Length: 149
Image 1 (cartoon, rainbow, N blue to C red):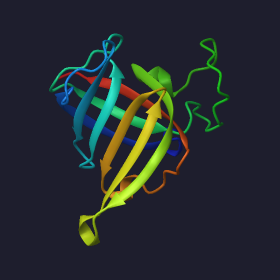
Image 2: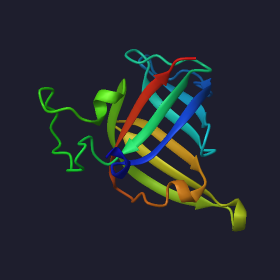
Image 3: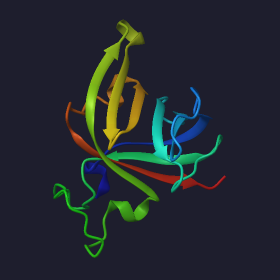
């Protein structure tokens, strides 16, 4: 049932944390590579509430809604509401895609998807086929769950 609401999902491993140095007290930038889709990602997370370390393995999903039935998000969070996709993850952010681009030519084309989650940024790069269905200004949920080693 979740396959129609999850737009992208893969397992990532953290390669680096704060490659350009630590800039904020409560946020860090992780650099990670996916295991199945050969995508690379830079992602800002609130490390005070969800600490990440180099070599941490996690599932990351991008979803259009948290509702299993596919109904759009209302914009309001209600903790007493029925079960939803967020129940299966540990860290959830809501944001907006603000830039989609492609670089290169022929078989070496790389797609880049940029999103902002209340100022915490994400850049997902890789094969265009994995991000072709995303649209500029689309609202998405980013969901993360660590995988035990």
